[in-house]
Image (tube, rainbow, N blue to C red; front, top):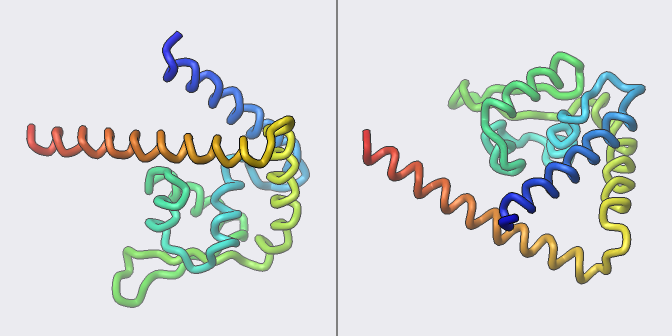
Length: 153
């Protein structure tokens, strides 16, 4: 089995397990596990733009817009348009978000602890370093393809 197929299977298993754990921990809230990283990022970086949030989380801008709209409808965040550019939206957590934040932080910490059980601190750091390196390579590869596609147009 090639390394990309093996890593994909392993990452899918890890992500599925984490999502299941988050969903279980949030069963008494009106939040979904997919909303957790968005809400935590907004609480940690109040006033971040939706575009900056997309870059921070490494997701598509349309995903951010959809998740933030749902969080806004639930009363966890508020969006504020930039006075100079009404298309640019700043996202702020509400008191409701800060009320649930300790539970979310505990949930993520517990899940991370379980997923890295048996790893030394050095191994955890190495894992992050290697994944960061692969992520940069993937981003570079994607941008090369995007540039090629633009030249073809």
